[in-house]
Image (cartoon, rainbow, N blue to C red):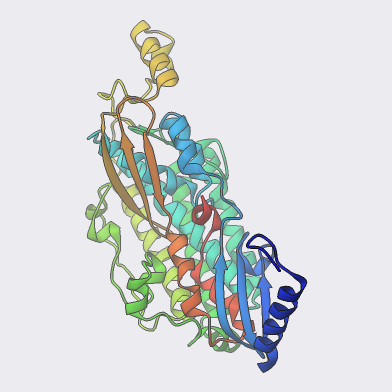
Length: 412
């Protein structure tokens, strides 16, 4: 007789028989991922199929878990900035800004207008970069390889701009608590203008390739439809929420960084299917271009960091080399971290994938006591068990591509 810690051969045989009975009606279990190009990262889908129809789909996450929130408790606020690059690693500049603003909210620190404008530029360029890749990979998921080549060529131009601004192409680590690492280089705004002038014709070309392409339309229209009610219930944000008809954009509804001073539209979908999500991201690129033009035309003079935040922002290098006070200030901030008062604060920004939130708890000093990250991709994946069943197996690539998630911010 089997004990509670043992399983007899008879029990195993009985279970195998039960499993065989369950599969008699053409049903079969299928693992999709975790190592598969369809899943856009290390995501595993436990699917159950009845013929070619998916009857059940359970997302399994955690393969990329790195313990970022716990790591944050053991390093200073600025030391954690590079870790935010690894969340949505397709838009690291925007992640940096969201984290810094959460800490600055806790410290009741207001950065200068020039710094705000630079951050808006970073966020919108990051949005264009992320959406270009999202559209390109989505087209590739639907069988349209050429679109990916167009979008990736434009992203390479953006990476050159990011390198000129931050010193890095991919993991930028540009933002600091109280400002940004350095001011924009000479002539950089002109090169940004050249880029945004060139990306719109490419977007028009992509529109010709995809929007009325019969194969693409048949594979995306009416597929993966998310109702307004389900989008809200599952906590979707960003393009996935707006494609379902919910007009919510934090840049408009809870403005930050002076977004209220810029004139732009928030595109909203009607049906919430894969096709709507594609159209919406393409339009968001155009709106980001509109915002960037306004920032470049109105960017103010002044400092790129909060000069009065002496216990939070490190002084410029030239001051460190010529002033004893600045040298001591730099030493204290580097070794102990920015001195943030005790308290707690939550801030979320409208990132390319949706609302990225940081909840920071401080007991004072230069290291957070607790940090919690709200990743939009996590919520986007949570709807899969409701969204996928009833679709064909071949639809799974298009549905996953349309949600445009990234596992870095999902697992953290």
